[in-house]
Length: 442
Ligand SMILES: [Zn+2]
Ligand SMILES: [Zn+2]
Image 1 (tube, rainbow, N blue to C red):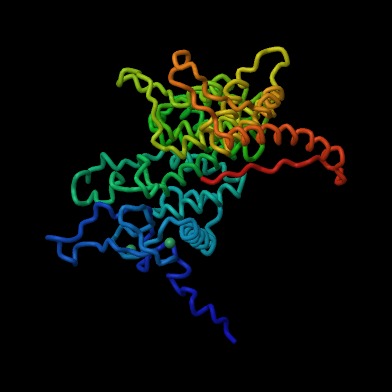
Image 2: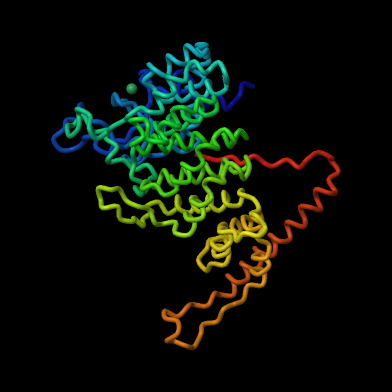
């Protein structure tokens, strides 16, 4: 019997060329927020706003970014992971089918192709090529530094600017101020990390140290910083050691995407050894102490800004900083360790999240502050004092559940140091215990 499910598989262009519309136009990231429809506009000249993803068939709200045809064709693909991955896969297959996987042709794709998905696929192939891909470094640099400006193009304010990013919701709830569509951002970050893995760090350095005209743009700096994280993933963190100090300063950037990226990269570089992170140590400790205080730009008076728009990003930022502090390893036995106090405060805080408590306990363990852990493992339940005048406002006592959690986190982390040693000694496999690679999702 023929395969019954083949009847459901899309055939022809719809199946094999998901990254293009039926007429063959490329599907690029866009939003329909400002597209015209309704009163005064004849149907023949307007575009339908109600569109469904051609893969998962779910309706895409018109402000959301989707992969769509800018010529007005109806095919759209939503940005759910499954659907966008299928589209990228189709683009890769197109490149493979016409056998364009040599450095020269891939470079031509990077420079000339109008489909962002094809460019992304080309970067993926370049990254797998390794050393021969060095010839394409200038094209990758061009993509990294590319300026997509929705505000200033010559169509600004006219009906043709209907695809403007100002109206677009990326996070689907409108909380993030957007610089560019996410497909563009993926391209930038992939270009930066391919450059880093090829060892072509010159552009990334220029951007980070402000020697490139593009280094005023936050999206370029963010991508360059995230590109450096690739070195950490490939266990070549020492190559980025000279940039650690700059990354530490970036933890206090006025733009929160840069702060988050810097914390992520410092954490990724951590396994390369304490020597790499050493120059950034002071910044890391400070970032944990007043994670909110960031100095504003000169033109606004250089006042401290205490603002995170992105609450989730802030949580990730703090977790990354705590993990990076742990990677710094044990401090000198005599000197007072500046890390201990903020980490212990995280461990014993009332409002600390579950994940953060365990991360802080782990970092304390790695930094060798076992006394602090022992102290926390019988963390006292503070009762509110009766003396109203002495401490005002009155400190709230921690609930029994919180105290219990603090004790458990500290005690189990202490235990795990002992258990790990036993396992190593009794290892029957003989070889060294391998660390799991820390992957990340963009
Ligand atoms: Zn979909
Ligand atoms: Zn089309």
